[in-house]
Image (cartoon, rainbow, N blue to C red):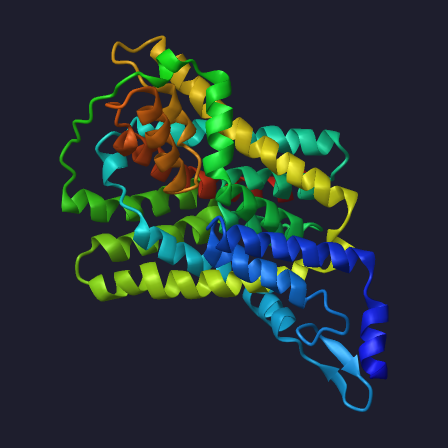
Amino acid sequence: MSFLLDGFMAVTWQQIVMYIVGIILIYLAIKKQYEPSLLLPMGFGAILVNLPFSGVLNQNIEGIGEVQGIIQWLYEIGIESSEAMPLLLFIGIGAMIDFGPLLSNPKMFLFGAAAQFGIFFTVAIAVLLGFNIIDASSIGIIGAADGPTSILVSQVLKSNYIGPIAVAAYSYMALVPIIQPAAIKAVTSKKERQIRMPYNPGKVSKSLRIAFPIIVTIIAGFIAPTSVALVGFLMFGNLLRECGVLNSLSESAQNVLANLVTLLLGITISFSMVAENFVTIETLLIMLLGLVAFVFDSVAGVFFAKFLNLFTKNKINPMVGAAGISAFPMSARVIQKLGLEADSQNHLLMHAVGANVSGQIASVLAGGMILNLIPQLIK
């Protein structure tokens, strides 16, 4: 009884806040079905690591000595020392992606590049707000709209805010259907949203589909060597999908591997959500900066499409530019829905998918660029 009383007495107001955060994440996962495979284990983990004398963290027990906590062990092995979990997840993500719509319309590569603007804009804002260049760069990568990339970059750079960055990245990924429509409608007219784009896909040969992940990996290796782990695992997963001789492994990567790693990653990252490190003014700023990154990614894609329309005869629906973020396939679905809202016959899905998968590549390249540049700047 006294031990139970000690536990209640040891609870701090910051831990209570984290219980509320955990419950909110679980609610969003179950009730709203926002990224449930991630937000549910992350929310439950936030509660676990903030229980007094929690057995999921390393602790010294009188008469026994130090006892290893499972979540801390998973974090140290799977994220801190090897970054294995985020990288393994990229194999599953790569196996899910069909680059056909992008290869049949290569100009969609441009939107993937343009929609990374929010990353670098947010880095500059974060520096102006007083964050050091390492933390600012880690915060900016939230704009990649790619949770594993955000975790990997912030971990490699040894950011002080891995937990808030992971929560912001995954929360805003889940909220893409809410954030993007508001951002897009703010910078487009209904007439622009009604622009139709006929879809006439070119034939993409199997040889090109197989060669594409290999070529992208080689190019990335020369341009941004540090990105090879990110790009390489993504492209390896895609090669499993396209090679045609490893169908069972491709299906396992898409389903079993991706689901299992996502589950473990969600509960493991909760180690960085311990109350005294998480409940700070900096965390609130990071959440706001993450929103800025997401919004400016979408807006930059829209404005780039408008810019291209000044020089092209066949107009591009500006909303397609916003699909250049990495949140695949949620962003493409959002653009399709907005297109149909403006015009019931305006089907933009395949164009948006092309931009969306381009954003998947561009986001990991952006992460690699940051990993290459930042160590040079702090020498």
